[in-house]
Amino acid sequence: MDLELMINSFPKLLSAAAITLKLLSVSLIIGLFIGLFFAILRLNKNIFINKFAYGYSYVFRGTPLLVQIFIIYFGLGQIEYLRSTVLWVILKEPYWCAIIAFALNTGAYTSEILRSAFQTIKPGIVEAGKSLGISNKVVFYKIQIPIAIRQSLPAYGNEIILMMKGTSLASTVTIMDLTGVAKYIISTTFKPIEVFIVAGGIYLFMTFIIHNVIKFLEKKYSFN
Amino acid sequence: MELLAFGDTGWGDELFYATLMTIAVSITAMLIGFLFALIFTPLKLSQNKLLNFIANSYTTIIRGVPELLVIYLFFFGGTGAVMFVASIFGYNEYIEINAFITGAFAIGIISGAYSTEVFRGAIQSIDKGQFEAANVLGLNKFGKFFKIILPQTLRLAIPNLSNVWQITLKDTSLISVTGLVEIMRQSYVAAGSTRDPLFFYSFAAVLYLLLTFVSMKLINRLEVKYSRGY
Image (cartoon, rainbow over the protein chains, first blue to last red):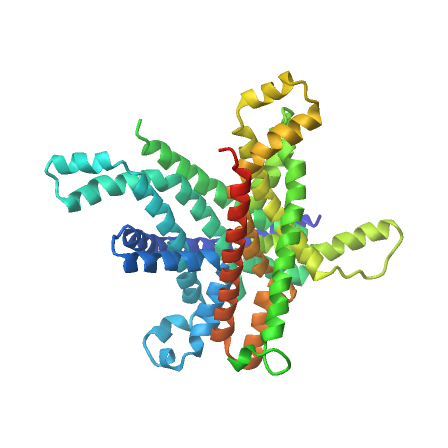
């Protein structure tokens, strides 16, 4: 055990963890909107809209995140037309490519979580709202969405943790996040176990925090 | 389309063998995972606090740390560990471990943590009366487990195990960082030499979709088989 290396690499890994958290929070926020949008499309009665939303979530859940990042980072740059548009400002940056891939990926899982949450809401609750003379829009925003959020909290908590692990793939497109820095230190010092303990410890600590925040929210928003 | 031709002119045959490699690694990793689940599920269910702690540490660490980091640990650390063990037996030459074995083992350990949780949940949700009834029938330990508990556990576990299989299959794409020529690595090579990454990575996505689609169909059949009588 090389304790000195562990102590020396700790601050480097900790500042890299900040990048991991930044990647995670930005992609989760964008992903939540994408997820909500597609969950609403999934509940639409129109078969084409419905199938389109299903296809989106099927493709993004059925392929590895690594493929998605590579298609966006290496693949899209190949289209000449894209290079001449404003979009290129975003797409030439590995940081934004990673965020786009993460957001689309977590959006697919989130849409499934929200869809099943909406579907488990008892029709009686919606009917009760309507019989009180509340408009459809208000029923949706004030009754259905809060219940759906509560229903989907446990599954969404898991998704946040999965996504945090997913951000490690950003290191494959040259971003120096926690895993990227850990790999760099491992390949220069050839001390994989020490670095794994420190980096893994930081990841576990973040998992622990997320887990407890979700638990707290679940308690706060529980029905009893 | 000529990019996918078989033979020297295209990448069809290379990608075909790479797909077989992905399937082989996934199945090996899944089986290694079952082996780990076989060891750690009883530990999780045991009354002994120490054994419980060991099993909980395993599942918590593996499920809380990114897969890629675990793969780097095995990729960079595997050779050192094997050489250390070999040096105890007096063998000091350089040993290179096969990328297939390292990769399958790393993914297997990850898959094992998920399988352990699935089996634990399935066994715990079996009605206590079933255990008691098996005792009353005078079955011995093996009979009780193989005839009464295991079939019911499988029925409850298969839907969740199919999720574990999907995760394992997708995780094998990460082994490409160690140089094992599976779908992702082959696409990387093909994209590099033809300068057509969009086509090859999209094709890789199609291959993965095909694999998940076909395996879901097969697992659904298993599910039907094990829910006979329900």
